Every structure is written in C-alpha cells, then in structure tokens.
Amino acid sequence: MNQKHHCSVYLGDELAKYGFGNDHPFGPKRHHVFEQEFYKQSLQEKVDILAPQTIDQSTLELFHTHDYVEQVKQQSKLGTGFLDMGDTPAFIGIYEAASYVVGSVCDAVDRIISSEYKHAFIPIAGLHHARRHIAAGFCVFNDCGIAIEFLRHQHNVQRIAYIDIDAHHGDGVFYSFENDPDVIFVDLHEDGRFLYPGTGAETETGKGNAKGMKLNIPMPPHSNDEAFMQAWNTVEEFLLKHGAEFILLQCGADSVKGDPITHMEYSEKAHAHAAKRLCELASQLCEGKLIALGGGGYNHNNIAKTWTAVVDSMTQV
Image (cartoon, rainbow, N blue to C red; front, side, top):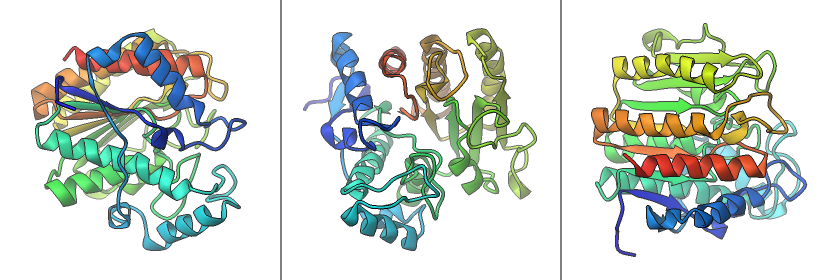
C-alpha cells in the first residue's frame, strides 16, 4: 500500500486473537467493535491501514526475562493454567497472539523513526501490567515496556515520555522504570484504594536519579471530563518541563463512563483531547513521534467510540 497519510492504524485478525474467550472481559470482540466503528466513520480515508506484524524472541527479552518468555511459549503449546496468580489464563497460541501485539508496536516504532509516519495507533496493545518476569491483569507481554527498550537498543532514543490514561495504574511500566530518569512517566488513573492494582500513589515520583521524573495522578472514583481537564493541565506542564524524543500514549477506554469493572466517568472527549494535545506537544518536542496504544476497556460501545475519537484526533495534527 502506498503511503497517503501521516497516521497509521494496525488492524487484523492476528491482533484480535489476543483475547481470553468470549466470556472473559478481555475477549476477541474488542478489536472487531473498534474496526466496525472505524469503517463506519470512514476513518480509512484519513489514515493508512497496516497489517499486524510479529516479533522475534530476542526483542521480547529486551524487557522480559528469558525464563518468563520460555514459560509463555510452553504454556502456549498446552493452553492450560495461568500465567500469573489467576487473572491471565493461558490458551493455545497465546505466545503467538501476544507476539503480534508487540510486533505491531515495534513495527510502528520503526516506521515512525524512519519518518514514514508521524503517528500510529494499535488497538490491541498497551498491556501495561505485565512485569519483566510474570504476567498480570490480562497482560502477557508488556508492549509498552518493550517499546521503550526497543527504542533505546534499536534506535538509540533515550528520553521517552509514557502517558497513561487507562483507569488502572500502569504498574508494570512504572516499577520497571522507577529508577530510570530518562523515562518520563505520567499516569492518570482511578485511585488505587478503589481499583486494581492498588498502586500509583501521588507520592510515587521515582527513585534515585529518577526522583521527580514520574507523575502519578490518582483520580477519585466517578471523576468526569471536568476533573480530567483540570488534571490534564498538570500533565502538559510536566511534559514541557522534561521534554521527550518520543511519546507513547496508553489510552485505555475503561476510564470512560459505563465500564463494567471500573468507576470512572470520562467521556470519549477526554481521550480525544489527550490524543490531540499530545500530538501537538509531539510536534513541538520530537517532530511528531507518537504511538497510541488501545489499552483496557470492557464496554464494547465505549471501545468503539473512544478509540475512533482518538484516531480522528491524531489525524488532525
């Protein structure tokens, strides 16, 4: 496909296969409801659609331990048991499905670094709970963390800003880079006293040389767009203060009103605003280099309207 636009979107059954069955909150229909709304709004006229890509094991191990990756491979063949303490079940082919998530994100990194695109959106991605040695919260491989390591090892990009507006705290990213002063971490999430994983207090600002380089903003349950916009001003000030060579946005739709497992009450306008402003900041700071990752979201209507609003915003900058 000849490139026509500055923004790309990854769509395909390989991404849809990352899901834990129709009875699980993180099921395969999440991809399809976004895809249907994407075409309904004719967004294919504003972006380039790219096929999902897979990745090699050595790239997975830029972030994850070798033993953990091997464990996923073995359980992927058997399709039994859990990859964590009980949230993330194995299924036959889970290694391959999770590798397509990571591969698509890394392919987007390559294309943006080479100036083929400025922005990219990957709907089934943003698996921010997985730690280096274990799965967590429906997340097998942490594509966010791998993208950070990939940017460094493959492209020598050091200062990376990670912004997360999913209802859940991005603990797998935060604690993996808590001591890293070059990962600018910003996370607006439902207060951990009321929601999994229970982390991300305002006092968690980084450790060692990285102290003050992380911004956690726990939001009260039932926070609305007005509360989001007030908090967002702090986000922009923080990013402008610290700068970045590349921006990653995790835009989980589970912070939109009506999600079955969270208590937040944003509308899709909050996510659209975040995406547009971050694209504008990316233009100012790093020649537009930005990837948005779908993240969580367990109300199908919310997924459809929120992620399409994000993509539409990304096409405008």
